[in-house]
Each structure stands twice: as C-alpha cells, then as structure tokens.
Length: 259
Image 1 (cartoon, rainbow, N blue to C red):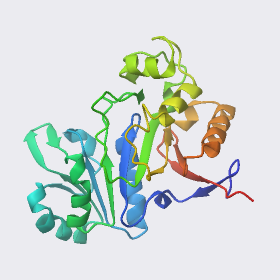
Image 2 (tube, rainbow, N blue to C red; image 1 turned 90 degrees about the vertical axis):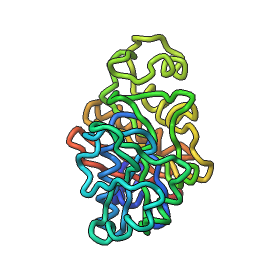
Image 3 (cartoon, rainbow, N blue to C red; image 1 turned 120 degrees about the horizontal axis):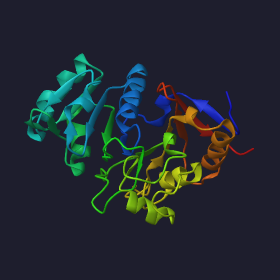
Image 4 (tube, one colour; image 1 turned 135 degrees about the vertical axis):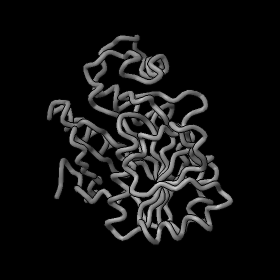
C-alpha cells in the first residue's frame, strides 16, 4: 500500500535485532513504547522495555511482565523472564509505593546484552502528561547507544494556546518556535518541535534512525494531515514516520524509494 509517495509498513519495521530504541517528547510515549514492543513480539522478537527517568507506577500498568532488578542482577534475572514472556519491563528499584527507578541511560547497552533481548526500548523523557514539550537542559535522558530515536508529539495540541495546561515547559517551546505564550498552536508548530534539534531531536546520536510519531491524527483536518505527511516524507533525515489516531491505532509509513 502507498500513501502520498510513502509505503505503509508494519510497525515492527521500526526496529530489529540489536536495536536500542529511545522514545522522547510528549503525548503518547508510553503507549507507543508498548505498541512497538508488542508488534516486535508478534514478529518473534524478545523485547525489554524500560525508562531512563523516574516512573510513576500507573504508567507501566500495561506491561505484561514487570521486574524490579538492579544492574548486578540483570544477567541472572532477565533471561529466564524473557523465556516466559517475550516482552518484559525492567526497573532498578521501587523507593516508594508510587514510584519506580528507571535505568541510568548509559547502562542501556549493558541491559540489552545482559537480558539476551533482541530489542531494548527506552522511554527517555518525561512530559507530565502534556501534549507537546521542549526539553530542559538536562533532558532527554538519551541512551548514548540509541540506534533508533522516536520523537512523539500530539496533534490534539493544534488550536490550543501555548500554555502550561497543554505544553510541558511552555517558555522553552515559545523560544524555539519564536512565538508568544498563549499563541494558538498550529500543525507547523507541532512539526517543528518534533524535528528541531533543540526539541524532538535533541541529543539524537548521529547514526540513529529517526521515526517521528504523531498521535491524535484524527484531531486535525485531512488536508492538514496530508501536508504534515508531505513534510515528513521530504525531510532528508526521516527514516519513516508513524501516525496514531485517538483509538491508538498505529500506521507506520516509509518514504518510497526515488525512481
């Protein structure tokens, strides 16, 4: 199948054996993490999911198997767990009843190797449940070995004001976009945040493949969505892109090869 000069491909085409996937941004990171993990498992791959930030327990409620395992236990704890479950989530500690500790980002390659997984997916950013964001100086917690980077942004932000209730770190977003606070957001604003090296692409390893994700695609007009897809298709650094509607049905697209 094709769509505007792009082929529709399985979601599992985003990653393969040996990949470390980093998910950043706002508006659907955790849902995207588990959707990709399950798609890879259906392809027959073994997947570890984790975060390189602190984690509120409810955000991992969809994990099929959660393990609290410090790094010195990974080689013992994780391979048997993956034998029983093709997708597991690993955290290093549970310091409070409401919070888990994720992994230090520089340990991502060690986690992939010690677990025996085919693919590691790391949610490497936080957004306090906002629709879009810009990263602070210490963000994202990017794994240095990431081979795939997935910046996420939610199109439900379109038409809403650039304000704290919709946007994480709105002052930083205003500086990147060159607009005032409370300005209504447009599809171009969302796309800029997704692809700007100060926002969605911040700290992306140079060789990493870029797969942007736009969620709530049914919240904008069809012509607006077509224009976004055309911009993504034309971007020289975009390997492919993914759309997800309000029901979290994902569709991955890869630009067609030039004739």
